[in-house]
Length: 441
Ligand code: FCB
Image (spheres, rainbow, N blue to C red):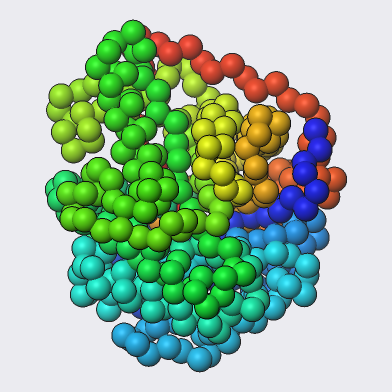
């Protein structure tokens, strides 16, 4: 039940979700428009973490976390093209220093969903130039801050950016499905990663760079129906497989090849970041053209989070095992649950960590786990309604309150082992009539 020596234990956050005061990016603009965010919530003040980071790190340290994943806000660092803010770079140097002083290993994300307004205004990820500009920003940041952190994540969840922003249109820039556009966006995100990897590694070969992949399990809703099996396999290939395969080969694979040809360095990841939350069942539906003809449904009777995402711990085990062949260290860079009452989170934590442990026993080189998240925060289109925190945080009072699972997690971090062995509940039976549609997120 013990985890390997030196295992990294922490939580993950993203600048726009916790800092407050980020008014120079595309998300802030998006939040101002009615209907985009639940309850018309705004990301300011979020957790006011931009000012309170030291106290917040004290709290996480007191909970025995020895690592922390967070993101830099590009729009603060480069508010205008080519103009880098010395004071914001200093701020993030202070943040990194604060982690080091507390003995917490930083994992720094360079891009977590938000784009400076000037990037969004000049074509965003549809433009190839954005990849160049991102690499210039990455290069500059690492020149300034590279000595303070060893682990760097270029981009968080490229497939989610493409899906939410360019298929569903529920996130900025709010565009609807067009296969060529989606391919272009994904290709530019990959190019951005490649260029940043090349630049940063050529100067700082000692740094470890990766990408945070959103991976989920797709199973056929009716395993006995060949078309359901086919669409589930297509989801697996496109959503989970495309970026991994592209990076492994060093060239764009379908559907990115619709964008045009491009190749990149090999290798271009020093570790694999895995964000795992849930599983979806996929059912063939000819009306779902924009979604590979797959309607995503929940198994009847499945335990679910406040956001209606299935709780499926075995999926993390399956996902980590499937990455063994990549031959790279793995970090679980996000895993967590929206659960305001903290009724399901303790069991969720134990079961998912049991899955991590099983994957390690099966030979997956998992080196760390970052729970999503420390504090309740601005959960994108869900606003403050979805509560993912080990610690409750009220944006009006800024009061922080530990949930019971924060203590449970603290005990795991402290002892580097699971306190009890848990049985992973068997997956609920897959019903002939799955229980309603879910949202991919
Ligand atoms: C992930 C995102 C993170 C948060 C969690 C709940 O997809 O990376 O910012 O929204 O989901």
